[in-house]
Amino acid sequence: MHEATFRLSGSTSYDAITDEFEAYISLWCNDHSDLLLVECAPDRLEAALERIDSFAGVEDAIVDGETAVVVTGSCVKAHDTSAVDADLDETGCLLLPPIRYHDGNRSIRVLALESEQLTRFYHALLDDFEVIVESKRDLSLARFDRDRTPDGIREPFPTLSRRQRQVFSTAYELGYYEVPRGTSMESVASVVGIDRRTADEHRRQAERKLLGAIAGQYLG
Image 1 (cartoon, rainbow, N blue to C red):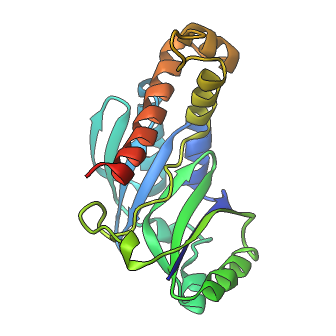
Image 2: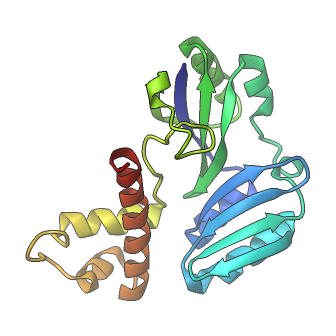
């Protein structure tokens, strides 16, 4: 069994929303509505939700700081003319939810019994998208962990938004995580070109995702 993660160039409103608001959207698709996990700076989250409402409708939402859980009024497939369902059916591949939107693009995880199916799926995607293969791996039964994830397959690595990646990498390169610290968050924010509070928020989001992935791999 084989799994690959593909990054597809943006062409939908969700792609545009993540680019405009520096947001991160995880989407679980149903036939009539979708469940979204939206992560965004608190001062931009309301505007991002308004844009989602104008695109797919918002039936209900729970907002907590920089995170919102949203039930949409319609399914993304009703609006997205570049869905990959036909390519999945043609190649016999399976989409592993959620679809993740970030940096004006989307990332999808795909499972196949044979590696050739993933190759065919990749070539089919090229007809509609610019495609980057983010990861590819062989799976064995030992890699399945049904106590940790619904599908039993751990993600290889969390996806950081563009700003999260920029803040975290800048902080690391400037020595923020050294002992003693080689820099301050004020300096990191200045290099990135944002205020310290916003930089702190992006740093915390990046740390939570990265530490969560590490803990999921190594802690029982």
